Amino acid sequence: MIQLIPYIAIALGLGASLASFALRKRVEGGSDAMVKAKHALGTLQAGLLPAEFVSRMFDTADLKFVEAQASKEIRDLFVQERKQVVLSWVSRVRQQVVDLQSFHLGSARFYAGLSLATEFALAMDFLKLRVACRVLQVSVALGGPYAAPRMVLSTAATATRVCNVSEKSLAFLTPAYAMPTANRPS
Amino acid sequence: MDVQQAADDFRRRSLGGYPRPLDRMIYLASMRDYNTGLYYHDGLASRYSQEVACEAMADCHKEAFRNLLKSSLEDLVDQMEGYMYSTHTTPVDFLTAWRKLEPYRVAVPVESDPLSAQFLFSSFKIALAILESRLHSSPVALSA
Image (cartoon, rainbow over all chains, first blue to last red):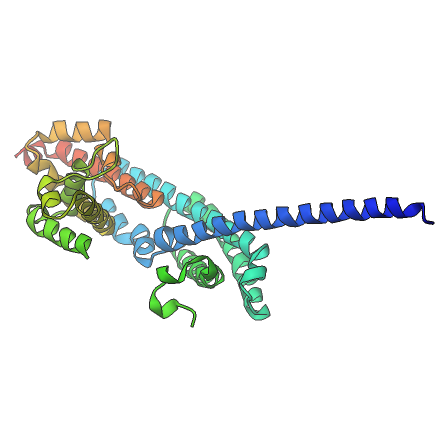
């Protein structure tokens, strides 16, 4: 029995090093997800979701103006160009949502302290967003840039809601001096 | 505070002569060094400092870009037509150069969101096609 002690000690040592290695990888992976999430949040809030930009992109006044032009080539060019922009928008929104979701699935629970109800609502929003983005991609590819205006608005609204929750979850990464006074934790 | 003051000063003294966002964006892009991305304006730098002047002009450039992004396609076509006449080149030469060289691609601020820039470039392309079709249908009107 005494002869087994060195082997047990070696096994325990190996187990401990493996555990510490696994834990370190998880923390490193977590920081990567946090950086990606922070970047995704900035891109969504400043670039992709501002209401003014979304309404400009889907403004039918442009379509009416182009339809009033005599040339069919210009109308075709407009639809083709706007379709590409809208598809890029959907694809970029989807990518940023995926990055935010990875953060929430991984490390957010260690830092954010979200309630179970919030986590559930967030999970539903992520699911809704990913499905909506896929449906939008197909609708726009088949029906053109103005194929699903209501879905665009609801997708933008859901993404904004997800951003608001994510912003709170990532607030610990923002130094207090960089936050507006009203948002500073007391 | 200095940057804000310098930007207001710049808007009043230098940008006053450029009422259209398109003209402002192109003018500001021309004040930027291609190699460093820094903006230079001797008058503004002498009143404030080179760093403050550079930051103020970068802010004005972003503002012009945002305003241009808000413009409807119809408004963009009007702005482009107005800019075209202000350059004193013939419409044919202007439209050919803009279609081939796409100078608007280097006229946006460095930190522009890629999708916003893509949207603007795409609108420029359509606006150019509209102006070209007007030129072909009524060459006298555009060459006046």
